[in-house]
Length: 35
Length: 224
Length: 215
Image 1 (cartoon, rainbow over the protein chains, first blue to last red):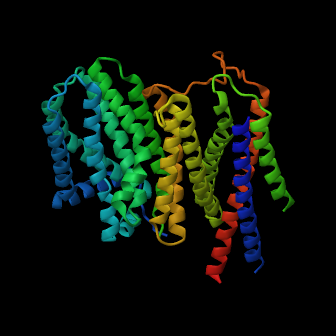
Image 2: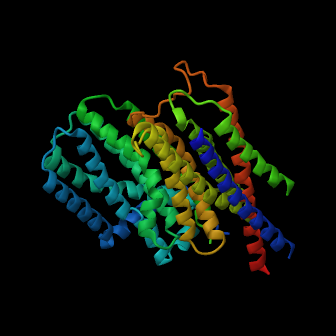
Image 3: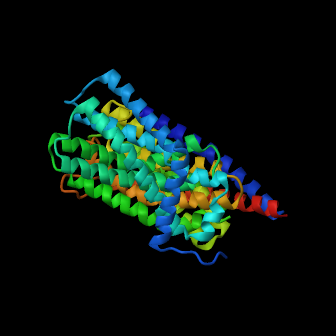
């Protein structure tokens, strides 16, 4: 159970970081489109 | 727009003859291809000797030698045109379809000449005669057709790129794998005495499909 | 932007469900969980391939560079997803069958897909200009498209299969716990949405760059 939860936690963390990166990328692209 | 372009069998034949003549003038392509094939064959034969019992290795080696010799030489028909800037002229007098078929015809002929020298040499040095001549020749014939079709098509695509040698190998590999699989399996099967209809069908279908795609796509390849 | 947040929650929920809610398959044991990641990613990579091929053909028919952006973007993303699928599959193979790579039909097929993607990207990089790489790459796409059925069906004939289907019984009907299929489908939908989001970013960037060059 413990190993399971650990791997889940790491996965969610990685996904969160990827998402933040993509969010910022999206904002940047929107900015460029406005110009 | 170019006018008066012929797409009859006459045009195809004319292109074929032109290619043969260009090649005959220098014989550079054929001699280097033959040299490559014979050198590879000699090297392999030297280190392995006769391996009549390992039909799978025999079949694989034969086709690897042929494929690599083909990769080394079949792109030249297009590269020569692009570098000599004769492509525009050619497109003025013939339709892309005729150019496609003419070059394919030449490459097929080229490959056959290569095989006439290489295959008997291979059989003598490495493995002895085929068990079943009919099947062997059928596999060689259809395998060569599929190989020529794939190599010609990919050669046409990469002729306009930089870094052609390595790129040709990388880009053509996925296209050549079905040919290799069918040809090697068929050659091995023939030595093992089993029917090779499945492999022959595969090779024929693949060659036909590639030919069809060539006819469809050649118009798009040369447009500048 | 709400949709993006929803995507985050969607995939997060899928992961949580996969680890905490769905049962394990007896044969696979703890490695079952890789299925929720590896299988959808592999499906997305085939989807990306199809999308890229489609837009290559559309580009040749209509000569709209927007189609080329889609073809190139889908190919690049497809390459990325393909690498992820291959690596995750290979790790799963090591855990299940003891070897990282076995050349069984599915592994070989994904490898072929990787070769085609890589060749496409290499081809684009080796051609100068704007219109020519688009055209040559599109032609190559179409050639690759017809080779793929041969690659997928030739392989089983020649190679022995090591890809058992522990999830399906011998009669071919799916016999797995519906919860597993639900999570797998959930993850597939989410990853497809992620793919299209990434693709849209790439396509929009391509459009912006071209607008800048024309200006």
